[in-house]
Image (cartoon, rainbow, N blue to C red; front, top):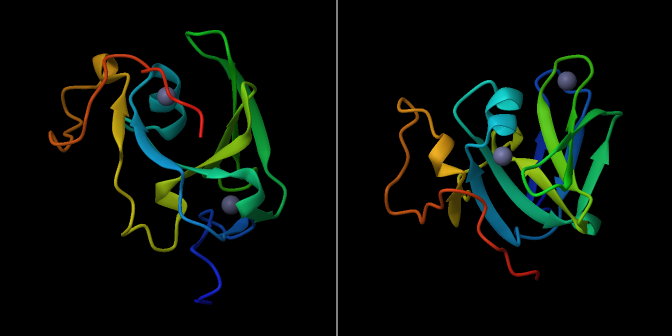
Length: 142
Ligand SMILES: [Zn+2]
Ligand SMILES: [Zn+2]
């Protein structure tokens, strides 16, 4: 793996590949209804980056959904294998999230916070030392 990237990743089939040049601005896990549905598991694990620092090769499909607070989240996935890779929000246009499970090496990933903890399924065990919020806490822009 080239040392000029902070991280690299791809979808299951390899049609979508990405490189990231800098460390994330924040990391989180979300148990909201939409993240559970799109991940097919108990939560989504996302690292957030400045859009300019994430370079994507390949054509993704996307799906828009409206959050509890009225913003629109667009989730991007591979049209062939279905891996969910990225997310964007219409209210923070310079930030993109990357799903931690699609990283080639995710050993650096450590959530700053767990959100929508009230929707956490009982079978989804989390590290109790990570700050957990019942809903989405106010996030200061960076
Ligand atoms: Zn794929
Ligand atoms: Zn969520």
